Image (tube, rainbow, N blue to C red; front, side, top):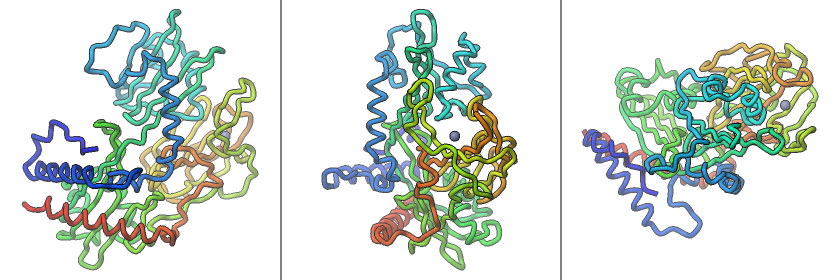
Length: 446
Ligand SMILES: [Zn+2]
């Protein structure tokens, strides 16, 4: 798969045009390079965390496509082509400040219908964070009743909510892992590291990741000086030529007058230095200060007691009384503090390396969205908000956007690279450092 080259490439400065040309040539070489059957041509593909390669993804996507009604199948990919006018279907592009309630009202749907869809979304919570760029597609039946609704999040992620015979809604999620394309960003520090990294083309999110990777090893404001050099490999995710806006840092080197800092992402989603020592901090297995017994286990196949259909339980429930302190499972950034009719007051935290945690049914939250939290920091008091039968604390751990059993999942434990991975990791480090050096030479020839 060649690098997606947009038509804006012609407006880039000559140096970038040259870089693009070389990257494209590099991709072509990779494609033409003889490789054994079954392996990927992408140098970064092997870094794809394991869960993404599981056939589960494939089968999910296929299931979704098979269930998708014909009229919805091309709903997002045929913008340019003339379409047969279908009055029973309409799109709604999310605008800043939109709420699901307001959208449903404006589209002429009842709040009851919205609650039915939200009940289906209880275990996914995909409709809780609507952002510009997301799109809803409504399909009506002959009685002008809502038949289905598709949420388009990005090219690799859609959710279809569909009315069942009994009037309740069910959901189908389509995930497409896409392709990752890597690129080197390099520069020399003038002024602050932040400004220099921005000038090199890195985003605020990238810089925050780099800060967090080395925060125990260097003080960026005091110890990084003018003249220090840095190299960063970032991979961006594409489905076809469309970006999914997902990206990840795969390698970082900072050359300081005193020492060299480095970090490389391994296939297990964790960062290590070039010697294979972990840069991660451990996760808490249960983010509570005391032990409580488990009242409901993680169970992706749990059946609804009344309808008998699958209503996954994506977390673990603990019998914590109202007011029990809830702690951050690991260092990270708070990305949601929300109130949901079923999940209640809840928090979501983004951690390093594709890990996210969710804390549901809270009585009181003690942090704000965007805030940085430390491992073990008190973030909320547990409660009984939302649709619950009694006070309890519901905890979720997500890896690569998939909920996993928080009690048994492999979590970063700040251990060095596993012995059996060591050779492959060191080989990968050599490959990435060479890529960094080669592309740095290219981009710094001005
Ligand atoms: Zn629960």
